[in-house]
Length: 159
Image 1 (tube, helix red, strand yellow):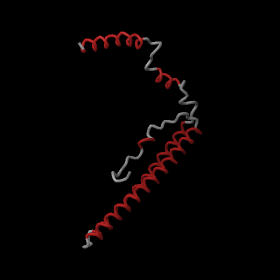
Image 2 (spheres, rainbow, N blue to C red):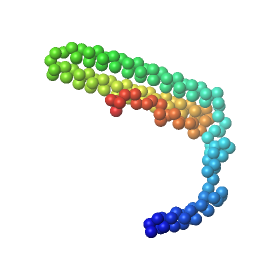
Image 3 (spheres, helix red, strand yellow):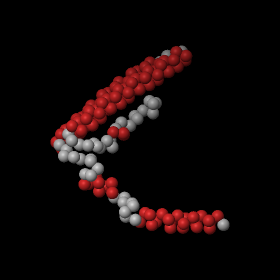
Image 4 (cartoon, rainbow, N blue to C red):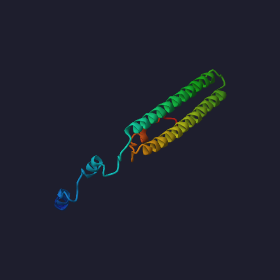
């Protein structure tokens, strides 16, 4: 009995929904695409393409420099942790060793959080500058699809 009710419901919904979707005047899945191609959505309005290319280059150079700095700090922090942990494991007193290991982990986490915060601030500044430059170049609605996933979380211990 329930299957019959469900089947009737599906048929009824199909009868009501299909004519609505088939009407070209009411629903056009390509309307947004055609707006973007014709420029009606205001995406490009006489942009200076050379200027926009320079803005993209400056953004990418800045992001690359920020990443290089970030990875240099990460390397230094990990080398410091390695040295401290090596020294801690030479200690014979269990309590002192555990305190040293915990301190090494805490110091590492503090340094990594600080490095991630500096990287994030650097990225935010670079992207703000990029948006301002693109606006000055005449590009409206500059694409920001890369902005959200520029830097993956590189360490599971850092939150």
